[in-house]
Amino acid sequence: MAKMLWAVLQVGLVAAWLMMNGMSSLSTEDALTVAKNLYAPDPPPYPVVSFNTLSTNPRQTYLDLISRIRRLLTDDTLDPVFGIPRLVNRDSAVPNTRRFLLVELINSNQDTITVAIDTTRLYVVGYRRTNEATDTYEFRYFSDAEDVDTLFPDLEHIVLPFGGSYGALAQAGGSRSRTPLGLASLEQAIMDLEADNKPDLARALTVIIQMISEAIRFRYIEHFVGNLIRRQVVQVPDQTTLDLENEWGTLSDRIQHSVDGTLDPPVLLTNREGIRNSISTVTRGLALQIGILFFVCNRSPNTNQLSLISTGGGTNCTNITEPIIRLPIEKGSAQMEAAGDTCKNIGEPTIRIVGRNGLCADVRDGFYIDGNSIILWPCKSNEDVNQLWTLKAEGTIRSNGKCLTTRGGQTGGYGRLNRN
Image (cartoon, rainbow, N blue to C red; front, side, top):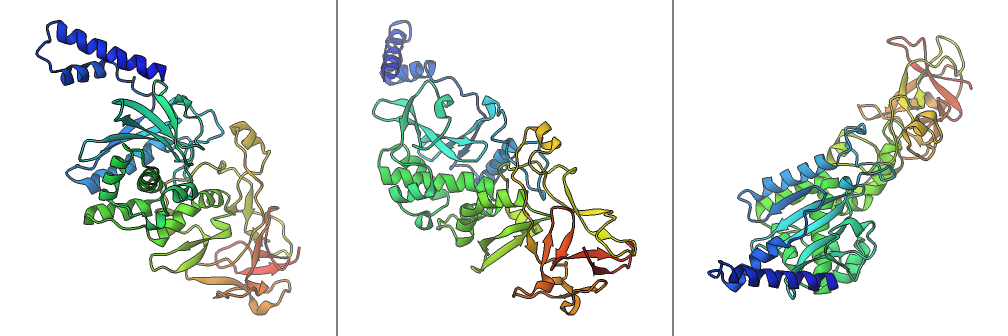
């Protein structure tokens, strides 16, 4: 507070000096404006992007904003996973200049707020606003925000009366399932953050978190909001949006720990038709809906491998040749230690193996005898063991203990079972 009072006093003194020294034509208001600019806070060290609701093409400007932020926050030293970029590793030494990103939001009244986003998780941690009572800047942040001391260090820091989780925001201002999104909602949110009404603050931040952070995380949400802006309407988020928001952490973890794209256990998501599905595979359609993942572990091409096996006409689970399924690096491996990364050990998921035609790999007639054929058969919804395969960490694929192998390892060779 003392720092703020001293800044206000300095502004007043400079304004008086300007009016007495050759600039008497300035009004008191103009002199104060000039003086305030002289004592404006130093620009922050973090990247700054901006969005104005009065843009001539707000939808395209919005989409460009989200794409630009996604590019800024992608860690180019990490390989994409199924084509999905990843954020910087939170446990590594994140440079101070990359710890946060600032998004300046301006509405038609020229109200301006600057939102601070954690670059390792895309959490909104707080915002800078103008205190209308004192006509000075201040920084407000969530009660559960981390590492905010470096944000706007010259400003007064004020803790908000609630946390940044959706549960805390709903308790303070109402559920996000009943909070409309769209350009008009963003316009109002910017205005509400200039005031002090607790429910309005919570609702405003709920809007901004979904329209900015969640849109960066998911292309689906980015285009959902973009279409609302194009149609000049507001609308509450659909169930697909809510499910994706709830499952970003789970999807980030399971996709990066997946075995050849198998999610274990599956993730429940609602599709556009409102049907809730169990998603067990990273399909191209799913990958295209995700904008970015938070970093979980290093998927190096030189990882532990799970291979389809050629027996060369033999009858045992040996002579592993061309690997087609790969496991993430095990904890404690030399590669991981060299990279300074940590990952949990991968499990041994039991799955159905589904071809592009939608048929499942099936042990013919359920006979578990050496040499029995593996055929493609309509997938079952029950737990019949002859369509269930366990991806073993030691490098085999097994059904009921028997190994999946190929005869001869040549074009046209069929899949078959063999003993341990």
